[in-house]
Image (cartoon, rainbow, N blue to C red; front, side, top):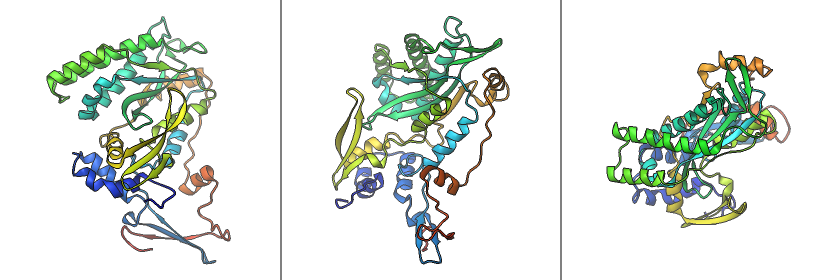
Length: 373
């Protein structure tokens, strides 16, 4: 590990996970994520061998396709972006963020699935309710929401990123928001806090949330005593940039491999951005602490981290969204299905089907998991 120039989360897990798991309880989703990352792009998952008549040969191992793996997700992100561009309206879009008080972190970690689902519900219902008020917008906007649970230093920080249309559907037609203002953030913050806490109480009383009662009450009271951060940025320039920007949040893990600076037998050093002074900083953690922080962000199996609401919801595509396309003069865009070779060529300017030595077409042979090329 000390002699490598390029480090990966896989290296840290391979060296330190066994000692970590003996001292830390883990759920099945965390075990599954670790197992996938450890085997990603190794012979354990099989792969294929490309060869050329000129003598060139290249072995490629299969990826794990786990959404928690730092080496996977790039292709899925591009496919997701292309899919969204087929539905997006040609209007301005705002970026909003909904965060919860840190006093609820322990409750969230103990009840991830329920907590995250209620976080989505509270944030989306807040936007729809305030947007429906004729004092502000008086219409139904389109919403794309993404769950994030981490800060740049891997600390636990559950929050929702939202892309919201600068306007919405009404019976009389499209209602556009003002150029630089969408909805009042103070009103959004108060409503979001009240609605989310109300949903948490109902879930606790019905038994959907399992937590110590006294600790639950203290956490809720402390959280209600604080102002919750909700902000809304000015609109993006150009409709394509909207989902290109959001794509940075959709298929991303808690940390990417290119942020790792140094990995030793005991320590991991990585870069992170401090938004307080907008500077790049370095943090060093014990390997076990790094693994603990990394695994906090493994979502429950099957949990959907990207959701659509309002006119962008699936139920509205053929009705309200179709009308909004006409009102906003948005041209229909047909999704073009691309092969992996075509996508790699577009993204990285590399033709993986041609020999890099002579340019002739490569022949490919597949070998099974734990097999030999």
